[in-house]
Image 1 (tube, one colour):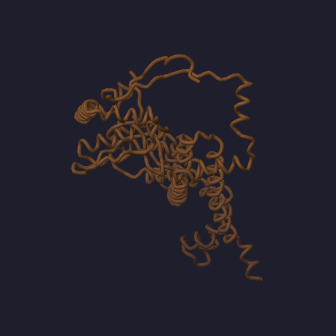
Image 2: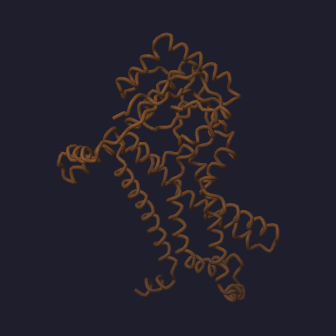
Length: 406
């Protein structure tokens, strides 16, 4: 129950880059129009008072191109996902504004903390995400006129005896199986939430696999440079390894997205693959180097003495032994990469973790979505590690001889 009256009210407004005064003025004019014709009051009544969860029909237009709108699906009434579609007060406001200025809205859902960085780097054109006007934010971006006043209230916990009684009553004496079935329906089946998980599963798997391939290829190149007789190549490789291993992956991910590709309209999944591939390469290159240096030089000399070229010597003698040596460590690093992909929500990629956050914002079930996503991460890692172990078995000469003997 709310404790007393609202403590204070905070103005909510749209955010714009300081260089886009034209777009901010257009939004203010649009806001004045919908306040004057009663559309804004109807929106407040629909989303805030009646708590309707269905979006009205809003005609769209692409006559003047597209507008990229940063949103953050923290839950209704402002912004949520229903049947895999954005709904809420902010979503309706964004679509009406886009229609007013003759543009096609492109809603980009990302972590709330990354919205201002995305706006400053040009990744989005406007923020409409239940954002309060504060002095710190005003130093970085411009705000429109407020489109809503949000009250802040305090809540007090009921007495323990009342809380226990309410818990027993709420559970209704249902069995564990019944509660699990109810959670399964509300978190997966209802509103087609399994589509969120499926999209997140595909994104996580794609990023994990392609980052591993890119990182392995790049790591081989860095290893070659690290072992080169040329000093400039060795120094460059050592610097690359030191910088990439010393930079947190979240920081690297955001630097690549907001700085390196700040002015480029690029798919954030590609940015994630590049960032994780670069990070993976720094570790793989050292695995390759220690694997090669661990093989006796006499074997390479013997291969050359038998008439093999340096490339043939590496491919037939060094590489098979190196793979066998490094695969156990490689698998561990690969599992770490799969788990690290859970941070890609910072650059508006809807992976498994982001899908879990969206579902929890709708169902308020803290347990089931997290366990469900943990199981899916385990499944991805297990399948891919099994594939690596199959490669390990195939690269073991002892196993190959035993198979031929049979």
